Length: 363
Image (tube, rainbow, N blue to C red; front, top):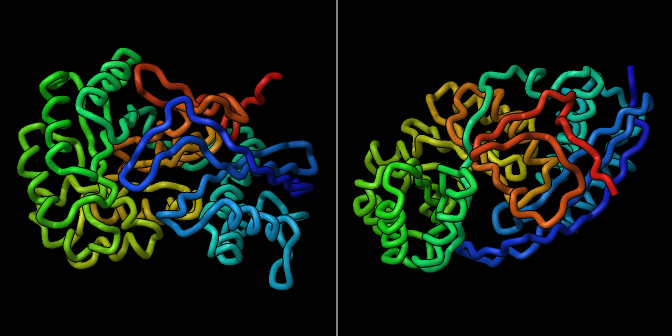
């Protein structure tokens, strides 16, 4: 069986072509940890991680330090060098245990291991995971801006073939409602709208936003309340909860269980690999969703094609996947690889190459 020969870890900052504002910060560049794992048979797999400190309390320095432990080991753990890639499940369990404080490090390592495993098996990762869905449209995100700027950016995206638009909200309830109303007025049923308040509302504002936009048939309302307001979410009417997507409230499988409780606090789980700690943890959350009739949305940070591709492979292997929000690599000025997936008129599908289907960039 092929063994892990080497692991290289590097930090790469990728500039955005379009900086944007969300409820708590302006985003100008993407800080990534990139992992390259080489097996002793010559196979090379890649992973990447981009932490969101506001959500998981981890910055890139923490991530890089944890990745160093994975390479070199410590007094508790031998690390990954010399281990059999065939023992993928065991390796993932050890990563989750040993690097529990660093979801992004766990994610980057798991992605690289799964890529290696798919390349070794000579199969696309989604096939090895059990593909349930062939392709799905992704939404593309508009940050917080004026009504006029929102309409202009939406028109640009529609011209590029995107028919699912996600609008960032959460700074001003009145303006938020106006932005949604003007988008509906401009595009009517030709565009599907989703919104993300990024924890920007209280309970009363959430109710007000829902009632004022009910006629616009929003696909979903993502995380209107603070992350720890699960009981407040549960107090909302069932028809409203059905379109609520938990994002910052959903970090781990344990959070998924809490959101279900005796009465689900939401109807949609937004799974992000960078939050939950990798592919294996995303699969655990998916199982909980499947057992409780919860729809799945797959989201992302601003990320490399490497991790966006990984999220897409996992998403298409889960039967309750209904929504993709995997636009995180589309506004990068540069990346470290190409390939991984194709996108046409906003519809995403993986390619038929082994592993994650990544290609080296030509110099």
